[in-house]
Length: 94
Image (tube, rainbow, N blue to C red):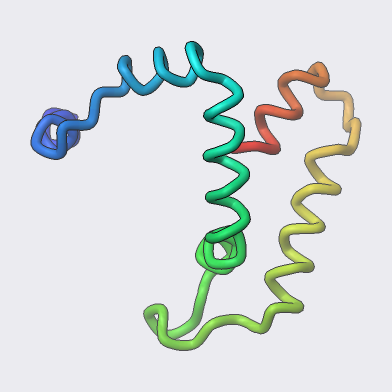
């Protein structure tokens, strides 16, 4: 854990300052998030699902899309878990 904290300090990553900026500028954060998803969303989805042979062979787009859709369906189902709408939205965003 100390190595992780040292790495953040070296890179000048301040989680508290980031959280304060997000809470102080929620609209700007949403714009940044939407822009990032628009530009990098496909790459993020492919990296999330995975690639074969040490990032040299990407999975077909249909498999990536199916995985993301099934994940969204599973997250939206009510299987007796006591999660409210807000918690589901947060889980989906993560």
